Length: 135
Image (cartoon, rainbow, N blue to C red; front, side, top):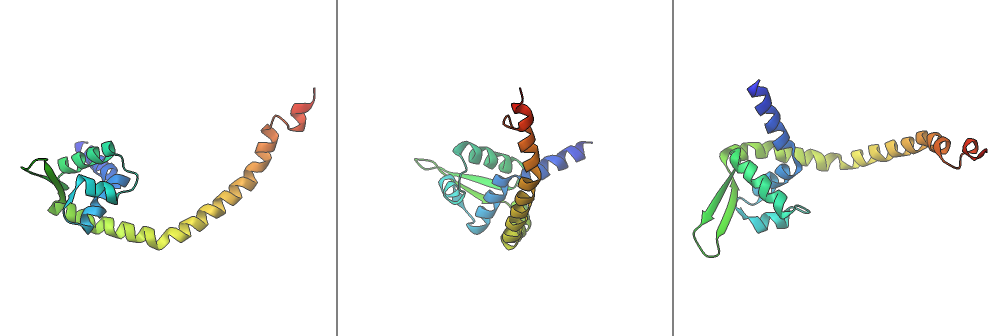
């Protein structure tokens, strides 16, 4: 049972959007400071970036190096284990770029169908529907 739980944790961690973006950023630039990662990863909060980096360090995917200077200089880089994940992350990102237009088309088609299919329900449940106006 422990193996299943660990596998689930790893899948959740790896599938997390911040993990994917951090691994991709460290794949493009082998060593980055915290501020460099924040610049490359849009909309990530300070708290979320710090939390995700700690988790990745704990899992052995990222190495944190503190240089003894004032102010402290901290760099992050992928470990060999993290670099092995980079292959999958890179392909995942490439798949996303290749299929964005198809996903957008599918979403538009779905939204158009859903709005037509939901229209009678909305009319029936509306306070202005004829059966609700009788009095």
